[in-house]
Length: 73
Image (tube, rainbow, N blue to C red):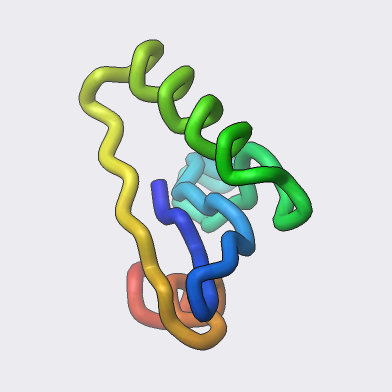
């Protein structure tokens, strides 16, 4: 799961999910950008409790969602 930030500000979480065609597509997950950092951390904690193999990678770059979509198949 990618945590997309820009200039230190949370934008969204995105993760690759299996689509109906059998391929993978990036999809938004979790809280939106107006959510407070404490709630964002609660979301990450909850997800890692349910899936201990989950990796959360933080991208703090301009247009992180676009970067992920264009560079990670």
